[in-house]
Figure 1: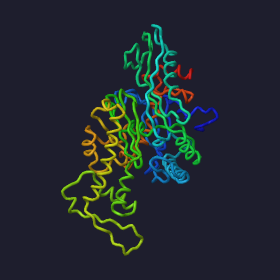
Figure 2: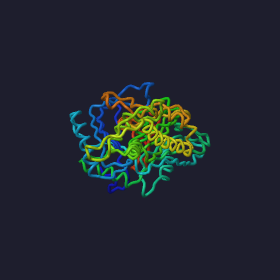
Figure 3: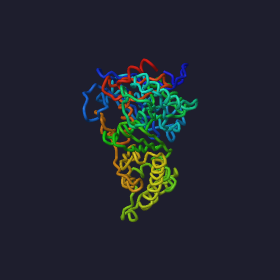
Figure 4: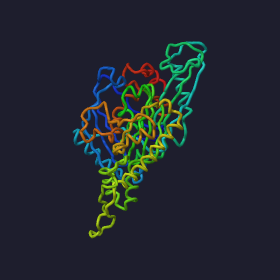
Length: 443
């Protein structure tokens, strides 16, 4: 399946999940620090108050993860290196699951992710809102986002309005003169998407769908109340830090900055004059965002950079490591705070922030984040799946788990560019389920 096939319509789209039967879904998280392949079995579940939008239980049946090579700040820098790591990760997951993978849902961190809201309205002439009216207004909003150099990753109606009354979730069968919609559209550069697809294709696999990293990590790490009341998920990866804002059950904003945990490592390598791998170990073992009274007294052994065995390790106070780590983390959090403020979504985020991603595990980070962001902060681990090995239960695996959850919520989207399908994932339960059939027929 080509991303830029002869139709020129854009991204591959996911096949709808049947709410009556089980599915096997394979996903690939291409990150700057690791590449993860997960294979999950999705089995239909009864509707419940817990995770109400979820139509299936997710059980991990295969997982493979490898240290990343060829990815820098979320961008593919060496296609051969990435291809070989993808093959290794997929192979390990296939062996564990006892099956062969053909296609994958892949994440997207780079490509200058952009989040925009488009508004459109149509005249109803005082009539009842019909399916065809909804289709017209959704198409009108979607078409505003079309650009040659960018592809639409997600296109989510965040709310309808009727005669100026905002916040209507499902206007079907209501009466009015003017029907409006706000459409949240996440786009990325086509070239970056093409490089991701090329990597996957070279490993003799196809791309089934592409999901923005902040969306995936938010789906895995946030609980229902947070998604409903308004919350920001901050995914601190190796090369990028991404932000997703959820409200009223939907993704309403995304953003990304090209700074992550690897930047802390390189700061340490430079500041302590040691190798990258030694700096990474020092960060994991001794790194902290908060200074303690003992830091000046405690000495840490720093291996030298040279190859000469006679070179002796240098002794530095732990306080120096803390100062270097804290400076970079504070800078990153200040950037995130400013981005949230500038986006206009600060009131929606309110006091709720969830930190996830590998770099969120640094000692003292939640306290530093509380101080800088002036909000309640918790560490978010992947939720809503079973069968995760202990090593994969931490925040570093949120994106991969979110990619497995995504097919269940994909029916909330509409893409005119993708040949537009609003798939009826849940069969009948979802808010937009009634729109499913007419969108299937019409787009």
